[in-house]
Length: 191
Image (cartoon, rainbow, N blue to C red; front, side):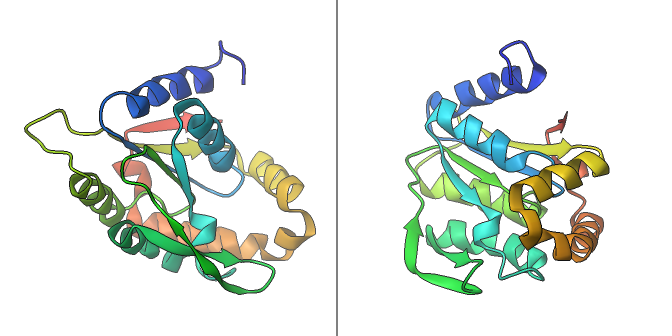
């Protein structure tokens, strides 16, 4: 993305918020192929944030809802075991979240009312107080036309994802209907 494009300007604004004062959290949601992972990686690089990828929490191809629900548990515990897609199980190693660093949470199912409450609790447990300026919490929905999303996702994950595209898309629709993330986000970004 060039410096003149809206995505770069948004990342610069979010990066400034994450890097100033107390560590903040940005949640990035959207359907598969909408650009969440790329946007999160660029934002993390610009802000020094750590990333929690929901793909590390989904327990396989039928696990979108379970991965979304796991976000609150991970934030409460401050650590998680990432899912190994090739082995089909969660790995042995633990990944710790540093509450003193900004955090980007990205993936389909990131933005739910439960996860937003968990983010605020995570920030509060790290020492933020309402009496001072609270750490920023921002949530985004990335929107992209379905044909382009499919093209991006299959280019990224190739034949591994192709047989699961339709069932994953159905899980996305169920998640969106149940959790209404578009109504919860601060901003909708067209990618």
